[in-house]
Length: 163
Image 1 (cartoon, rainbow, N blue to C red):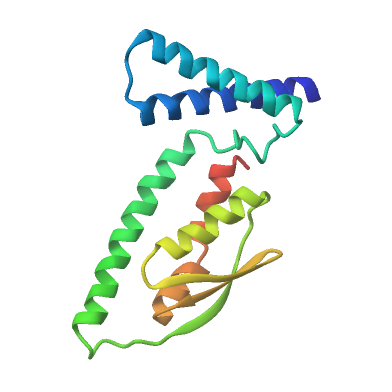
Image 2 (cartoon, rainbow, N blue to C red):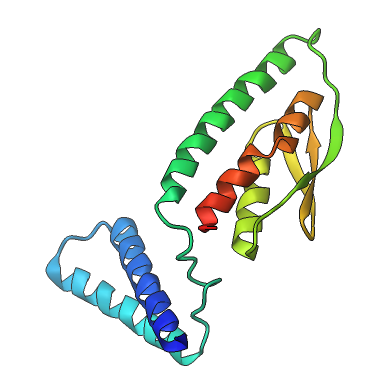
């Protein structure tokens, strides 16, 4: 079972490195593509020899649901940008800085990092501290804090993790 899991993660790492190399290099010459792919294979072999290929190094659990989450997060960031712009441009709107602990149901470190970074990417909220099962968040308004406390972002990231 361990060999199968390691092999799956090694293939995932190899594919991820290959796609990244192709996207970043921009080369279409067959020789350069072959050398780039050979480099990716060498890296996977070295990582396997060092025994560092595991579920945390190659988060295969972040499957196709990841793309849906990115789209949803983009919409949330846009809505939050508009809300923060309104607050900045119209001083009469209430600003009520709030610190709140929000539940974090993610089971992996990768999931917790994605959740904390997603909170920070959303304008008007910043992840301050991560404890077991919860994240301390500073929000510019109580409404933003209540939106996070509702747990929609938490549930979506748990789904991306594959649970």
